[in-house]
Amino acid sequence: ESFAPPVMASAEKCNERMTGDAASGYRGCQAKTLNGRTCQKWTEQTPHAHNITAKAYPKAGLGDHNRCRNPDGKQTIWCYTTDPLKPWEYCSPIIDLPSTKVSYECVAKNECKI
Image (tube, rainbow, N blue to C red; front, side, top):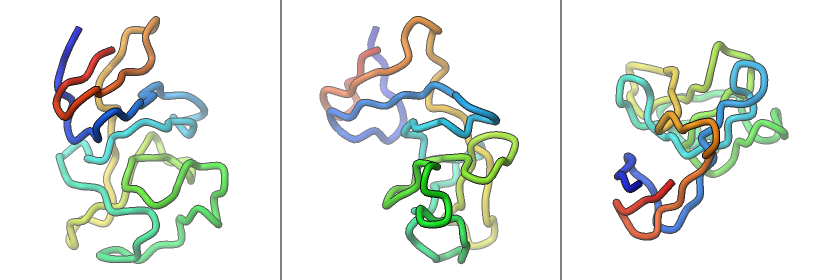
């Protein structure tokens, strides 16, 4: 089964499983909010300054990336946005995967397989 998920790096594996309390264990590749805004990198302080850092939340999967996470116990995964007027928004996984398949691989840009 092939599909083209949004903004995926070449040859990158992503686990989109929502695990842990309120998806605190999510380590997928979603970098867009539910409203389509691009996420701000967790290591950056602009346009939104914050204290949700890898140092403050060492087990939360934060780092030099802009992927959605839930480090602080919100309802589900979220991110700071690059929109100066919208500090943060909730996210959802890139795709809803069947329970027997929990990851997919992109072998080339826009060419991914479950």
